[in-house]
Length: 282
Image (cartoon, rainbow, N blue to C red; front, side, top):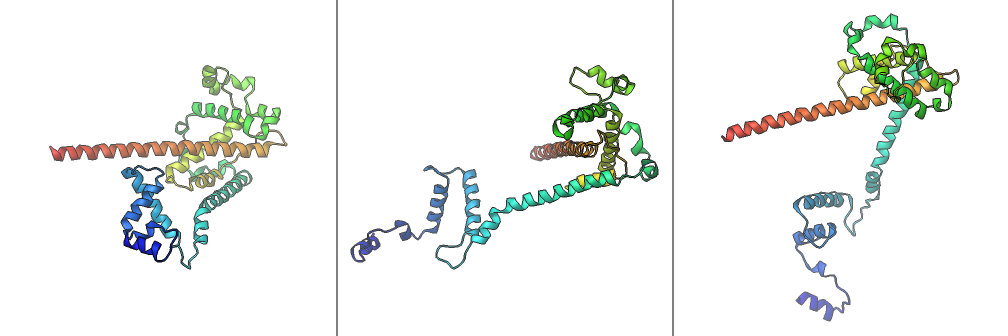
């Protein structure tokens, strides 16, 4: 108090920040944490830790007041980190589109490449044809909405089987379960999806799942041929859209299943660890 009276009476201070009088750094710290929480009540332990981490990062990035160091460049680099992520995503998208174009251009005859694969890879029981035909019908329906075929009845007609093929034994499963919502895919569409699914199965059997698994699938898919489907005007663009949609959807399903298995394994390990602890306690 003597210091406060001295500054006001002798030095004629009109305003004085009492915070500068307190030299207790710990008290300053807890005051900042309490103020950063946005309320007058004390933060709970979890909220305190979160605010502490944020303040720790801010203290490293933001230079002290009155110093000769400018923190603008560092702050901008942190704020623009999302731009770097989006730029990487754009580069991967460009690479993906390029690989799809090569997939359509550089296909080789399947007969000359069968020897490159194991016999078990080509066995028909590796792929459920009934389920694959149903999914091909789903791909054909989505093509009506997401590709150039939505304005071309000829393209959409070539993605569906005609009445004769619709009564084929291969499509009997769809016909039995059809309630007006399932489409029967044409043989051209089914051949594209079957070859692509075969490449996906082969890749997943021999390549660990990672961030480049999609490009590994395309690398193996280039060993097959993909005859374009659709009219003369739209067949290349339509086939590319079909390949993109199936690859993206299939990889989403694969990643979800992989993450599900990992969570199940982690849960099993946790239960085993808990049972061991209980056994030790007993």
